[in-house]
Image (cartoon, rainbow, N blue to C red; front, side):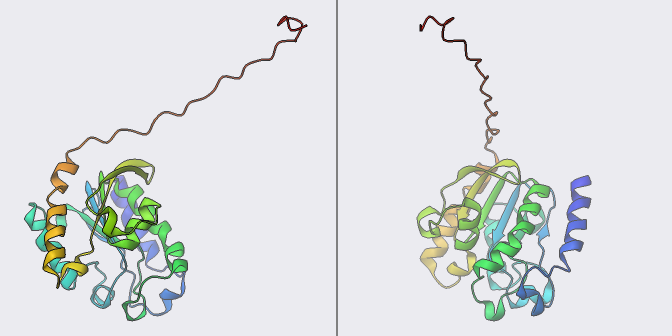
Length: 214
């Protein structure tokens, strides 16, 4: 409960964020929505027109497809948490700029730290590259989970195509459905804790005479 209260307090704090120029053109910050204690967290790219107006991520056509995909594995928005890499809409729904991601990513790290998900599913290139720390595009890594540390905890990172990419492409939709179908299995998987740090014991050097070197 303390983490939930802290997440809500952080949401209220972020509502006035002015870390980058996007603050000047937004209607409101789109912080995130869903279960603050969810085991499964989705991370998308950035708010669009409808998200900026309503203050909730994934409420347009891509959001409706996300709802359908969740329903296909027996889940709803109330069972998961959904957020974006950046919290304000870029003008004209353009791609986020590197400086905008850099300014905003701390908000996402804090969300992950407070929510403590077991599986973080990235939707599209921007979220995948940021959270994996690798430049590899979504086409090559979708559906391939990896253990990593996010928010100070070990999680399964699971890259997925962004639902917007599958809206009008049946082949892409089939791939997305197939990748989604593995989520229940991943949620049931145990993730190994991070290895304990190894501390080397300092060895006191003996005088050369005692070692018999002279």
